[in-house]
Image (cartoon, rainbow, N blue to C red; front, side, top):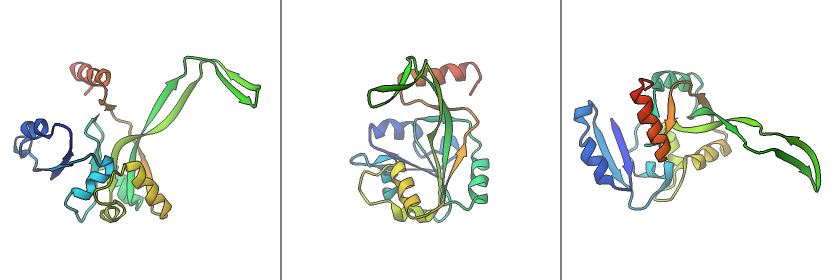
Amino acid sequence: KICITMHHKPEVITDYFRDGGEFGVDIDYVNESTPLGTAGALSLVEKCDHTFLVINGDIVTQLDFRKMHEFHSSHDAVMTVGIRKADFKVPYGVVETEGTEITRLVEKPDYSFFVNAGVYLLEPDTYYYIPSDTHFDMTDLIQKLMDDDRRVIAFPIQEYWLDIGQPDDYQKALEDAERGRL
């Protein structure tokens, strides 16, 4: 059972996927009259009584969702956030200062961070943290849950993952598929 929330050009999505039968799934659609954010749209979705998956529509991944679910369940979490390691190379010398004094200079450093990968597992009671018809992002939901001392955990995604929200990234996904990486 899949529910797709959408705002921009919903007819393109519904014309392609229809009821989902061709893909072996059952699809419901929810139209947002105004964009409600990555979590706010969940306020429009029929509530379920079991753990559910939320994934941003511009993510291409080979993530093993069963393993993520096992991890989520074994850690007794209310929310599991898929994370991905991202490496950034700064093309300049980074200058650290205290006031006007230079305290350190690092030439073209590399930094690594874990970033939100746009893949989430949530327990049904997370619905109660999402305001109705209000713009509300997953980062807002994560913060609300943490503020309420609810267990939110990170699941590192090792498999192929790519956000195709930008044309260059979409092109990379097409090339990866052509080369058999997908």
